[in-house]
Length: 149
Image: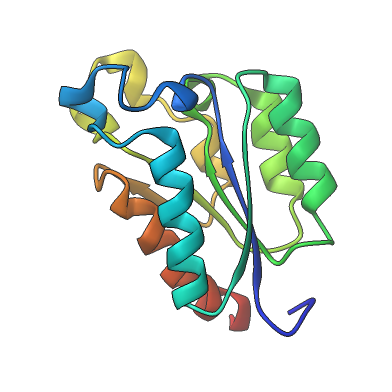
C-alpha cells in the first residue's frame, strides 16, 4: 500500500460519459456523474481513496494508466469499445504495478460475437461483466485482498 488507505484509479473509456443516454435498456439509467459519485461513496465506505477519469481517447486512457502505475495501488478499468481491439491499452494494463480489474456493465459474452473478444481482459487479474454499475463496487471490494496476494 502506497498510503495509509488503498488508492485506486478508475478509468472509463469511450461512450461511458454518455451513460443514462446511451441505450439505457442495456447500460442502465444511471448517468456517468451518478456512477462516479457512487464509486466515490463506495470507496469511502471501504476505506479507499479513488481517482476517476473518463476518456473517449485511446491515448488518454493509456497515458492515465501509465501515470498511475507506481503512484496508485490498483486499477479498475472499463475500456468500453477499446476492450475489443486495443493492444495499447492492454499493454498499459499489463504494465500497471498493482492489481488490475476490468469491468463491463453489460454481459459482453451474451452479446454480438465481435464483442466477445476482449483483448484487454488478457491483461486483467479479474474480469467482471454483466453486473451493471454494481460491478464497480465488486471491483473495489476485491482490491484489498488482491493487494495482499
